[in-house]
Image (spheres, rainbow, N blue to C red):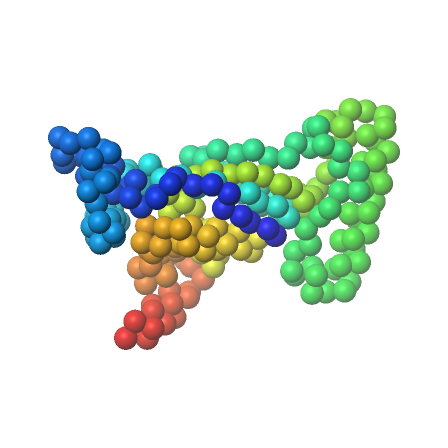
Length: 230
């Protein structure tokens, strides 16, 4: 998996802070941004997050280039609808000898690997033959969820908060959890205050809202956070 933050709102935290301040001032947004010190930006963002006043954070957006992930992952990713996506087309791109993603549980078992690889090889051969007979847009119906894909994804900070809350969770599927963790690491490098409290509820609040579906790690995470902060 390869994930890169290719562009983002310039000085995203200052943009968010200026957007928040204009709600309570008759001055222009540009003037408000210029007057903000780093300390004031950090303080205002922390206040916004603690109050749950998240509409101003929508003014900061982040664009990621993502490669080496499966169609299984991308099908989950696009369920986060307040975002923009551009993905490699199986209609126009020739998928003969397609690359594919092998789940860790399969990679850890030699028998499972043998079965998995054999089926992938059969599908590669079948796709190649079918693509010579019918349009690629129809041959692609043979392609499995394991096929490797590439995409560009843009989300605003509020959507990323929701994404990290759901997909950094231990119960999230392994591949999209890895993607979410890498994306969170990247945005924290450019907007550390804005994303300091972005993540699953067990990590941020010390509580899990999954009910009976909980993985049960919330007490452990809460204890670890207390220890680290104490």
